[in-house]
Image 1 (cartoon, helix red, strand yellow):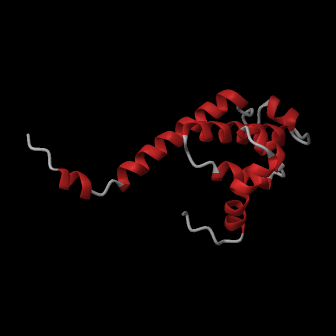
Image 2 (tube, one colour; image 1 turned 90 degrees about the vertical axis):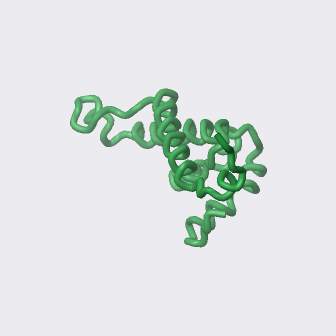
Image 3 (tube, rainbow, N blue to C red; image 1 turned 45 degrees about the horizontal axis):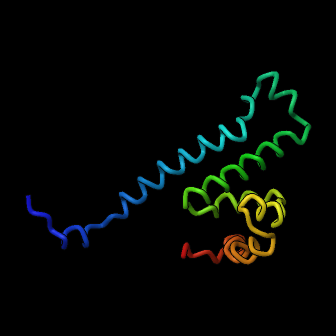
Length: 125
């Protein structure tokens, strides 16, 4: 078998990269569920008991923090989780703590990207 470096260097790997990312995101979600817990199913007594409380919002924030930490540790882009955290009102201090950095470092690292998305200016670069 002849190995063609030219073929390897010129083949479009975009579909493979997207497939790997999709699997990684699915695994990230599964592990965040394991860390933060999953909510009760709608219509169940447990779900009904939570209605009108802050427990669903707290659980979602905890899940987003777990997913954010997992994404960082795995080398994935944490932007989707950052967006959810900031929309939920999570402070840069808490985000920094989750990332193991200061509030100021977290803000400097990610605030521009978060703001760009919210302003519709994100280009994905």
